[in-house]
Image 1 (cartoon, helix red, strand yellow):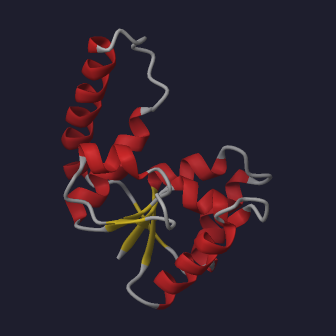
Image 2 (cartoon, helix red, strand yellow):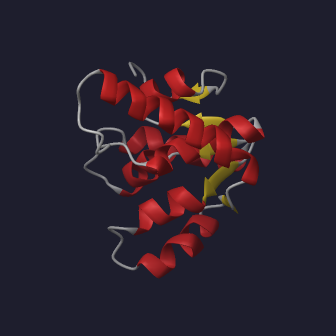
Image 3 (cartoon, helix red, strand yellow):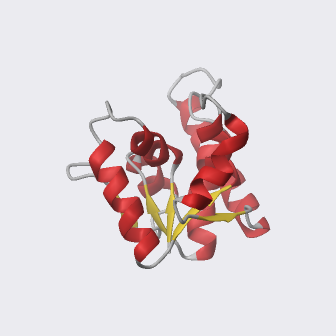
Length: 141
């Protein structure tokens, strides 16, 4: 199964995104194949700028996506990876106000804990923090 990062869901609904076609084709392929998953975090983030946030979960289900809660097994690995990230910011003299919120780490930890592939266009942090996660990215990322 493929867990979809929020960036891919947003790209699929934005015809102006340079990754629009890639995202739509990947979702369609996953739905028709090994399965497409959106979790609690991706649904929440995708709903932020939606015209009708209440409709987002139903829309994803209509596309054929499986909606999943975050597994408890993702909590501690996400926290550990986030702590490493914050410690690195501190060592580099950067503000501890993270531009990368904890939810991004929850998505990576979910993929890791459940053995899911992760579709994203932000692969660097996942490669660093969750190196065992198999990534699906646009060409060149």
